[in-house]
Length: 329
Image 1 (cartoon, rainbow, N blue to C red):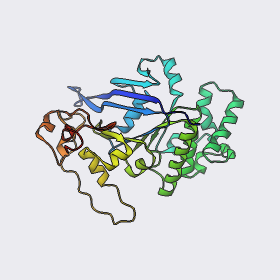
Image 2: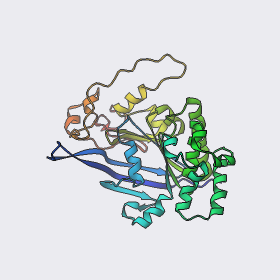
Image 3: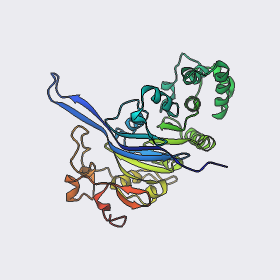
């Protein structure tokens, strides 16, 4: 019998500001607002899709969750404990429970090491016995539907899809609770994408995993995610169940993204580009970040940043059009 869903990860008010000096000789220091006041939660056996255009802060958010880069503000709670308060020793323990799969498996696998050596590395770092490591490598390769004999080969001997399976095996080596998948299928052919997505789904069910799934491809996100959070200029502008967001999008930016999804079997229709310019992350607008490109902009959008309004059960939208509920836009 499968275990009931329960909250694994809660992120609240997560922000990251990078200092940047203006001019060659110092001068005033400016700040890049990469991620601003981001909050979300993921249950065990649940997949949250983080979507948005390139450069909106998705990958930075992933690295903040793992504390590969230090947040400027916010909390990251794993099973209710804030890992922002952890010592280095405690953080090392926590990182065993959180692993990442990158977009380019060739870049994340050492070309000079065999597949087995690459999969073994996290176990070696954490003091596993050699006999246990060897048994675990064979088990992991079977888990991702590859022969155990592949452990003796090198990354260049495999296709892109096979390399991504190896990267997934490596991520599972320490039996994590959370896997962050950062554009894990964007570099693969469509047929291979489907195989990898199905593999991730099976592994989630078999190992009680939670996923933070990062992608710019909304078709892929719809296939694998239970919930969706839409990011724009470092902020989450809409969040809800996949069904809610895709069937009843409330934020104008979400609707613009969904209009761009190609419909299988139909002729591609030109999508009107968003008008206006993308605001600067160095000098973000005082109001809604999307106001300069929004076709439904209101006067207050320019000067006042909207809070997350509830537009359904566990469905929120940061848009003044939704101030009075789902029927107000």
